[in-house]
Length: 480
View (spheres, rainbow, N blue to C red):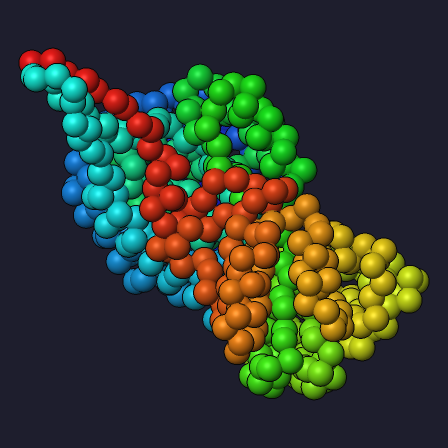
């Protein structure tokens, strides 16, 4: 086992770190080598029951702590994260693969999320409604919804857990968070920051296991009043249906297939530089990563040429190597998926301008890839690649291009680059996505709502919307 990795991968239930009681476990591997670095136990049904009881007891305590005091504890948590950034980021890179510099940015960005919710929780305001009769006081107050079940993914194991935990705690809720089994150590170290900051026992419970078994059991429990899930569309639809069956509120942040529109009037070199960085960040394993590049005719050759030159310069390697510019994919399944989707595109007539192949026989490395002349029936234009593949599509007519950009059932994020105000306004009003960013990458900040529409889910994380997701409205009419 790598000495830098955690010696034990405990679960956290009712304020205690301990091994789960189940005999089931799985190996944790470093995606840069596919060699074991740890072993993770799975939660048993008894562990889930303990977590549910702890979450209920923790909620009864935490909801009565003032928002002011809750905020102080959260701010202390953020301070501890910044002090421990090197430790948490190293674990994140070892188990997830992303560049160490990217991992540090994720941890520091997560600390900003904690800080933001610490302050926003103090502003969960209600209101007074003018009464129709003397002596009547009509009030609307916001209350924490109750214990939460959160399910977070492996591509941003700290950030995605932060959004769910902090939204819950800022609102006064407790949470059971099931973090990804592929990347358990960084969330463990993250949760230790909350513990050391003084969050009471039972308010946060962290566990791992078989996702289907855990989710179905928690969603059905009468203790749980809110579900928050980030992951694939099929799993999100399943959990959404279960939540509806049990009348549980839910936030679903699901997959995307982001279009990016590049118009003739832009500086192609600067836009290509920005977008190449966005595309190959975390090896393309980002739900808001640009995937379908619609480039207007006059800008096409210069933009695509510059983009390909930049992709060629990317050194793929271990995320712990400072010389690396892109790390491995998270697991062998992603490599196989990339090979399959590129082969399908080639067989249907697409041209591979660069990349398209796995790298070496050790680890989950795949070349930065650019496809051109991609036909409409290629899988890559309909299935989220979730990897380092960019498709270039030439267009002349803006209306036709906007129709194609909106043609998929996904509706998470979209981007456009133009210096023409009229075009920017039209694009902003026409793109059918939950988040639209014009001329920069302006989404996913703690203070802005993050969420999609259509098959990309519903509800938001971040912004005041991300706090309201964990609050319920109570109307009180009082006759004195």
